Every structure is written in C-alpha cells, then in structure tokens.
Image 1 (cartoon, helix red, strand yellow):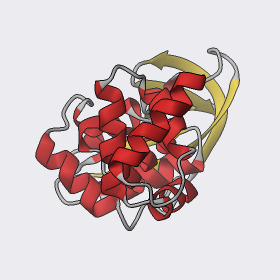
Image 2: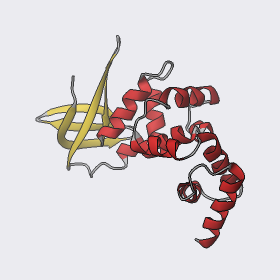
Image 3: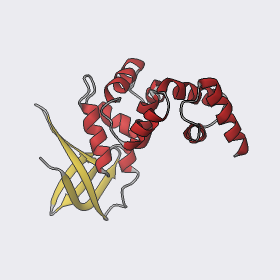
Image 4: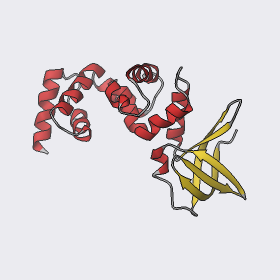
Length: 193
C-alpha cells in the first residue's frame, strides 16, 4: 500500500494532480480542500494517500493532512458511499466543518454538497456520529444536546446570520441551554459583536 508520496508537483488539473517521485509520475485525485492548499507547480509536495483497487482501475487519492485521509477512510466505510462521494464531501466541507455537521446532526449542511441527497446525508450523520472521533465532535456533542444546538443554529441562519457567526455564538452559550434560551443568548452575543 502506498501511504505517502513526497515529490515535485508536476501538474495540477482539478481534481487531479501529478506528483513526480524519483522520475515516476503518480496521478492522484485530491479533494478541493487539499487542491487549494497545494504549492505552485514545480515545488515539493507531500501527500498522504489512499489506494483504491477495483477490477478496472487502481486509483490513488491524495490528501494534505492525516485528518483528511482519516475522514475519507471513515466515509468510504459507510454503505452506499464510494470514493467519489467521499471526495465530494471533503471538497465541499473541511474536516472540522464535517465534524461540526456531525456533532450538530445538521443534514441541511451536507445536502448543499453536489451529489448528496437527504437520505445520503442522514445516513452519513447516523454512521459518523460515533466514528468521527475528532475532538470537536465530542466536545460539541457533550456540551449540550445536539437537537437543541441544531435548532438554535437553524434559527440564527433563518434570521440572516452567517454560519460562522452563528456557530461562534453557539459555542459561547452555557451548557444545557434550551432552544429558546439559546436563541436569546446567541442574539445577545451577536448584537454585541
């Protein structure tokens, strides 16, 4: 198994890159989050990889970070989610945003990704709830019940606040806040900003 490649970035053509490692060119499919973090063509790059072997092809996927590769591996373990869908999810959301969506059980956030419908989003949330064990998921999920947090987030988004502002305000709320108290508290915090 190829776990990591370090070499010269020979070409970039979304979503694929070509990495020259000792005279051998490796073609990798990368999520857009990794693609935007790549250095200029001709520079040295290190990518963590995952090799998918199929009857008709061997496909190498590359990732800038171990967290991204780990999230990709968790996604492809889910029934009905293939490598292309996992790549689309990681192209649409960063690992921290995916973890936050799972912690908040926010299917609407996942359905914004092309190719992810409501049923797939709900299956992803259900399957990843216990598996995506990144610190943010556990801290956000244990801080307050996910349904209340999710309802507060939806209310703030409906009032016109950006997702970034809303999530920042929700993180400052006291533990165990009810939906109505959470919305009031978040609005107070947002009005001060």
